[in-house]
Amino acid sequence: MDFLTDYLADVKRRDLLRETPVYQTSDAAHVRLDGRNCLMLAANNYLGLTHCPAVQQAAIEAIEELGTGSGGARLTTGTHSLYPLLEKELAEFKGAEAAVVFNTGYMANVGVISALAGAGDVIFSDELNHASIIDGCRLSRADTIVFRHSDMAELGNLMSRTPCRGRKFIVVDGVFSMDGDIAPLDAIVELARRHKAMVMVDDAHATGVIGPGGRGTAAYFGLENKIQVQIGTLSKALGTEGGYVVGSRELIRYLINRARSFIFSTALAPATIAAARAALEQLKTRPEIVRRLLENAHYMRHQLSTAGLKIAPGFTPIIPVIVGAARTANTLAQELRKEGLIITAIRPPTVPDGTSRLRLAVSAVHTKAELAQATEIIAAAAKRLGVIERVVR
Ligand SMILES: *Cc1c(COP(=O)(O)O)cnc(C)c1O
Image (tube, rainbow, N blue to C red):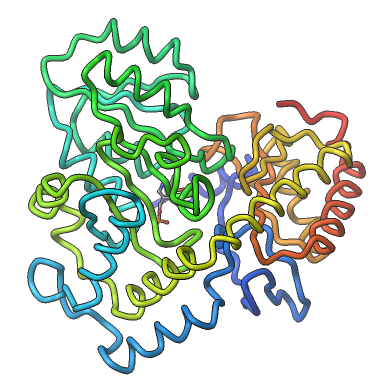
């Protein structure tokens, strides 16, 4: 098994070795690390709902009433009474006929894409799509044509040029997970119409973040009824875990019968589904938390650029500070950790070579004072490492 040693030595030499850091969470915006209180700027917990008392209470009650596990797959014994309620509420929230919950967003993408597309079909996929979309495309055996990020001229050309006897799909992240920008869904829908393709949007970072009331990318563009498949996760702004798909009643019935990641995995625990329902209820009844999130994102983006850091334009809470080399991004993240800021360095293969970055994720529960102080610390460390002059985008 020498290949393991060789591989690990190689990734370590290239500063790409990955490990799983352990944090002691103290609330939605803070963790304890080596006995010290740190500001969390790396979580996708955009609305702080992981620590919302109503959400926590719903999970506790579900455990007491229904137990800790579901006991089986959805099609056998695992569909406890909370599932259909959540699915109905998700469909309503997204303005769709029906919804189905998967165990994770990853499993939703892999299951949905491989159930809908097959040999002879063509999938047009943005180059920055999430790994779970890429894996779904591979598993489907359809021809996958990758287009340059959000380049609609190229997408149009590829769609005209690519012969296809089967079905055509365009698949994109709604809000791109590492760049925080929004897919040009209006142009995508128009190209799909012209080329008779179906559109799939992954709203992992869009639900609870963009669109009226945090309803996601389709709602942001007012195109709810033009998107055939909306995918998402309960693990980010909704603060729990699980993936979901919304669309027509037929689509959902088809997926329940065809998506292998749905069929062959044990259903989520009652506490998870109860928490998701309570989180969705918070989103519906307190839309001001989404406004606060976007206000904080705007504030942080302004602070960072005023401090001389070059960040990609946009308004979402995902703020990439492009650093370049993987080693520099790593060192910067480590320095910041010593100063009480948890910010992830994102390196290849998650992002292309030479675009390693700090990925900041702002939440609705950060205070402006915390964000201002964090900016000072980041700017000082970036200057020490000579990053501020070299930042390019
Ligand atoms: C996080 C993420 C997923 C996976 O969702 P999980 O629920 O974490 O498995 C899928 N797509 C995108 C764009 C993501 O950012």
